[in-house]
Image (cartoon, rainbow, N blue to C red; front, side, top):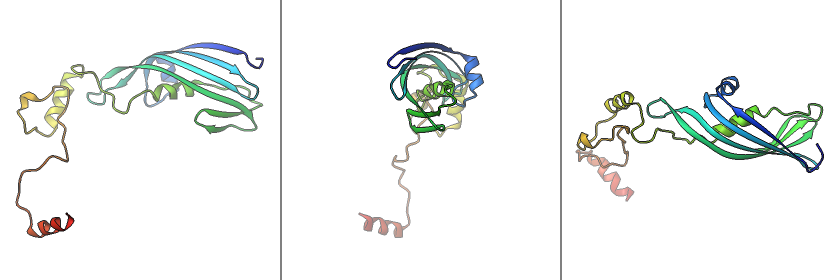
Length: 178
């Protein structure tokens, strides 16, 4: 590959890919990948464009939910004496190897698109599981008719508690704190 030239590769990552990679976050999906490899004088620039859908468990009901993957990532690869990750997007591979398997990088790019909290849109959670969660959760002080079917009650540690008699020694200490 001459310096300054670009080569494009296209991949389709399907359920078989996710099963073979054996990563914990994603087990199923269908993601299209376009990889453009550009050779510079001292390194290779790899530009990844990923788009598709993966299936991940909902944090609330545990049923699979669709998550849209739409991301672009960049990776620089240099040749050196031994394998070394110089930074998040700079990789050094041994010259005698001369090749790089990008499968795990593709999986990581996809896994990084998953939000910390992933739940179904309103009304799409498994109704049986939502009902069980509601029964197991703390009861709301308000009327139970106001409870959202897909959302378990939120327990707020900052809510004022009912007035209960306290030890007068604690009351004296609280005055000192102010």
